[in-house]
Amino acid sequence: MTDKIPTIAQKAPYAAAVEAGKSYWWCACGKSAGQPFCDGSHKGSAFTPLEYKAEASGTTYFCGCKHSGKAPLCDGSHKKL
Image 1 (cartoon, rainbow, N blue to C red):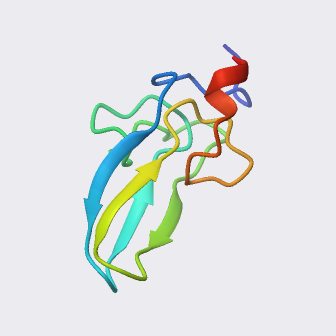
Image 2: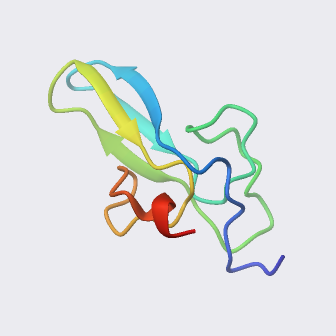
């Protein structure tokens, strides 16, 4: 793996409960043990986590394949991998 290609954590979205007004840090590298959120595993790589600020409380579908064009949210890109 190179430093610029993320690890595919899973080829499906992660459903996560979020609370309005709270920030969540999405794992961009794919190595976090706490998917879909960052646990610091990216340190030393070219990746940085991406902030997602929830506008409403409910279930949000975060990208699991790390290839979404609408990161951190799933856009179905995993279906092409």
